[in-house]
Length: 279
Image (cartoon, rainbow, N blue to C red; front, side):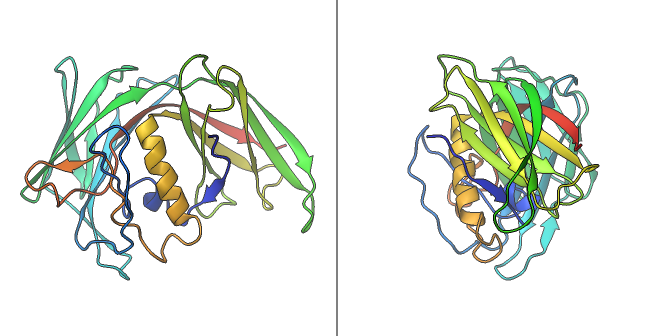
């Protein structure tokens, strides 16, 4: 069904897999269990390949860290890892460490619909993950309106529109960033009720004023990643730091020890980014 709730998450790293979360699928549609005690010293692989429309997508970054014990919000960056991505044609893209825990590739070649495999060697462990690069339909327009806020002053509301492709399942993840937001706000949706039709998504905030710049990133995502993010957002929407859902598993598996999986989700998304100037 269409996932309508928006989420204001207290740390982008928390949401986008860099510190606290993960989900491992043993099949395309697994039942996922949530253990509310975050395991100590887990490897965390923050591997989002984003191909923004209008760019080559050649430069990509993967970050590797270790989650700290519960009640300790610090993380340790993992240096000395070997990181590469291979596509289904056999092309290899090497990610080189440019600073502690940050690995960069400057010659990545994104191809819509192509399968990619991630390989990470870190601290004596080998991790892999598979994912397809998912396309996204472009944003057609953004509209701005004033809407009543029954708890206070009227607020500015932004609505963006896009045409969903017909006769296929599609899933979307957007994030909003601005100076008036301490942390990004996220919006997850699918086309269950709107297949082949125009979809609109709304964003408002009491501190959004004329002159504000809102940076919107609209992604196409896979069904498995959608299911993963739905769990992450549900777990983190009330208080992301109260109970870290450290055993929500992603698609990154440990080939040496299946029980010692890495946190994170390897995902490849086409995206459209727009910087909107609020009137």
